[in-house]
Image (cartoon, rainbow, N blue to C red; front, side, top):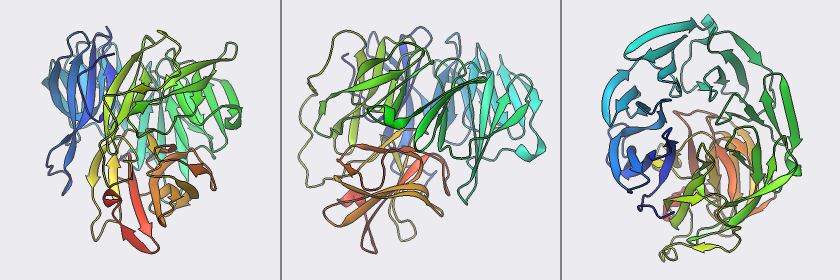
Length: 431
């Protein structure tokens, strides 16, 4: 579909009627939140019929209420905000976890050890969590199922261990989730199916029903929910920084017979609209810039790459930005890499061609994936949740290698992108 040229889109929320997208995208703007940061998350409403962009605020994790009357988001100063037409009607500074969930026009959220709801300006407490679960983000994180009936709590430790809990919203009852080898969990976009990723397999949990499959069964490691939230598509994402959009074949893992789906090799906000009519994501317009793309689903069998507006601009640089996100910190005498904030689970790609030299846990940096390049430089992605490659794998520039996580010492979901030449730190933005 033809869209306005919107660069570096990080997140999308579809309005219930499917006519409006609430998008957050990177805007260059000096920030007093993090010293030296030139980028911030701006929220706009995109009218699909007219292409009009309307400003909504500065924040992320936007979400429409069931009727579409309200939009909530996590603001730049750590407040949960509720707006109507871009006008803030409520700010909830007591919310302590960024994730929240609308059920109809009632918003559920966490406030330290309490589950609370906001409805038409009134806040009430649903339940109190056990005393040992006084949530402190980002050492603790939580997320809600799409139907709002359940939630998970993830508690990260600096020794690499992770404890997970499953909760019931209505009662606040919590039970431990015994997933000792899991690296990443994610709720389906509809209902209450939980995806659990392990280094070598995946699970779908829906109540007491558990389906499991080895990752080797699928053509690639990247996962994508089907629009109904009952299955997954798994496959490769073609490495591309040329400005062309290729198409990849994914295997559908559902209750039905085996089949496939053909999807464009987009990054960032990869995903279907709730009704399954559209597929969105970001395409590269330069080594370190992307643009929002929207495809109509089922219109034709695609195989030939689609040229975008033109080839990426010529440059002496080679490294691609590893994730669609906002730079929040640079290389300094006290900071050894580039921090790029992006939503949990976002795809991280290799900065250049090379071979995978390290996968696993390190102190402070959490789960990492490192790639050695022909130049002798080694680039590493730290704080990841799940690796998509193994030691010894050959990778191409722009190929997915990991997912954004919260492991190690973090202030929120991001990748610490670090480059070394021998024992010397180099700035990957200069490469």
